Amino acid sequence: FDWLAKPKLETMYTIDDQTVLRNAEQPAALHAKFQMTVNGQPFELTRPVWHRYTDRIYGELTRPLVFTPPATVALSEKSFLFADTKPREVSVQITAMQAKAAGVARLKVPAGWSVQPAEQPFSLGEAAEQTTVKFQVTPPAAESVASISASVEVGGREFALSMLSVEYPHIAPQAVFSEASAKAVRVDVKTLSRKIGYVMGAGDEVPQALRQMGCDVTLLSANDLAAGDLKQYDAIVTGVRAFNTRADLRANIQRVYDFAAAGGTVVVQYNVVEGGFWGGNPKILDKAGPYPFTTANERVTVEESPVEFLSIHPLMQKPNRITNKDFEGWVQERGLYFASSFDDRYTSLFTMSDPGEKASRGGTLYAPIGKGAYVFSPLSWFRQLPNGVPGAFRIFANLLSAGKP
Image: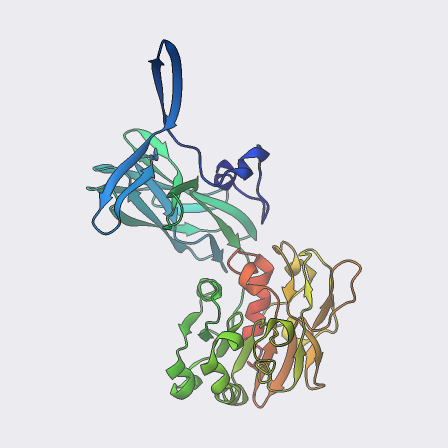
């Protein structure tokens, strides 16, 4: 799977040989050639070399041979946010692929960035043993989007590969190697809300991204929603499809809105329409906002689609001044499951649409609620933030701060 190992451009892969797309498995790393003669007729057979072994539970198993470097490396995140000029810690995990793997680890940064120390020694005794080394990376003062990469030197040779093992009972084990690199984003991000309660839905990586913004993020349990002290948080964020997957959220949503009315901020990400052909509960989103709005299967799939600001809204002015530049470099899409209609107490912040489509005003809605604020934003934050899109951090920081004076 060479095309998986090569760096991709946003969500696009580079495929030099189209025929490899038909392969369900990687080609064998080693083949054996057998030559024989039967009744005077020569034959030659080529067969892949596999390792055969016995498992105490599953019995006799086979797996392909994999040629590996003496050690693999992996960065702790696929993107690192530097919201100011302060240095931050970057962790590198080293995995021994052989016994007695020892050497030094290095972190390579582009011009204008600096890293300390220059290298970190490591020594691993057994194969599969792991250790983590840490570096301090200092970004430049100017905004920058760069790449940092990790490597190890073992026995005088340098290796810079990560390994992903794919193992399921119904397929042969696969090993995918790729360059051990990550995105480094230097962009000014100011955040007024620091303590965040997060209601995980179907699963996303937004909490990790918020922690990179300097937020203290707590994943809220059913007990937290039912009886926990919500006043300790600056903002509560519901993850993707949280209203679809969390009955405890729906049951305790009034406590969440009471939190907002007392001065907090509630940010709701996208949820899926249920009912009709697809089945499910058509009323499941009735309480997804403090005031009525209707969710529809409206989305903007072209990530470069123009965004029109409807007014000079305070939410787009502080703590970060948002411009069209903040919508540049987005990946895969703008958003999905927009609001098709909404109560007059909501304010739409901007419009957007795919080429040739009617502009939608339901991409982000704001409403004051008591002393605080509610924001419905089905933009694809779950894609933009983990992928280190600079403007997405700045916009989301403003949404988190909506209830702040």
